[in-house]
Length: 128
Image (cartoon, rainbow, N blue to C red; front, top):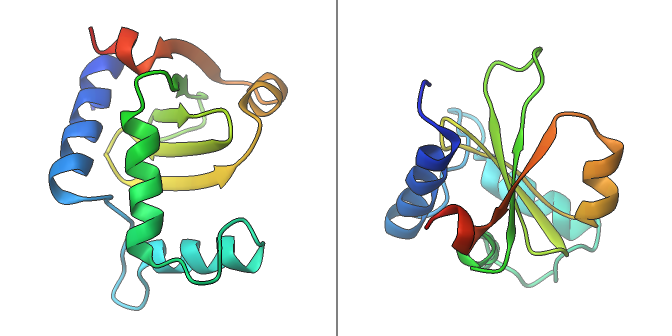
């Protein structure tokens, strides 16, 4: 994809607000449900949460004006990733707009220990 990171961010937010979170799918597996089950097993989410609840959490994070956005890319990657964070949860979406991961984590620790993250700014500032 040749789009700028800002354009990709706009596309992700628009798509997720209009059509919902875009999870990877195969004929055998819906990765959103598998990811939700994993988060429940790890006690990251309440047992009674549905995929709809999880998707709402993701949508709230990507739409939060004061949440942070990072670009994540290494030369070995086939695409760039947009990373949204509310300082409790980290949402990683590929530039192809497909959800890669949503996980709890302290972004300042996580990003500083892993190469390839570049801070872009707060959602409200990046989308000006």
